[in-house]
Length: 158
Ligand SMILES: N[C@@H](CCC(=O)N[C@@H](CS)C(=O)NCC(=O)O)C(=O)O
Image (cartoon, rainbow, N blue to C red):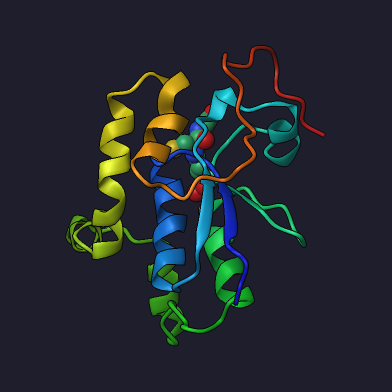
C-alpha cells in the first residue's frame, strides 16, 4: 500500500487541483495542507522560494511547478500511465490549451469531486479554510505549513 502523497496548497488554486486530479486518476491517496501562497511559514518559503503552490512533500526531491510535479508523479507511480504514448499528444497533455478541451476536462468526475471544496473556500475567510474543508471531509495533512497572517517582506532567492 502506497503512503498518501502530501501536497501543500489550497483547493482554490487551479494548479493544486490539477495535481490532485492527477493523483485521483492514478488512484493514489493524498493529504493536503490547504494553505494560500502568502500564508506560508518559514519552512514553506524554503520549499517554495517564490511562495507558489502546489508543493509536494516528497522524500526525494522538492518541486514547485504543477506540470513538473505531474511528470514526476507519472514516473514515480507509472501505473496507470496518464500520458499518451505519442510525443506530440504527450506535449499537448502537458499544455492543454483549447477551451473545448478545458471544458471537457473540468466536467471530469475528478474535478467535480473538488468543486465543493473550492466553492466553500471562496466564501470563507482564510483563517478558517483548514477547519472548514476538514469538516467537509477533505483529507487534511496533520501538519500545516501555514501562518495565520500573510508573510511580508522580500522573497529570498537562494
Ligand atoms: N507554473 C506554476 C504556477 C503556480 C502558481 O502560480 N500558483 C499560484 C496559486 S494559483 C501561486 O502560488 N501564486 C502565488 C504567487 O504567484 O505569488 C504551476 O504550474 O504550479
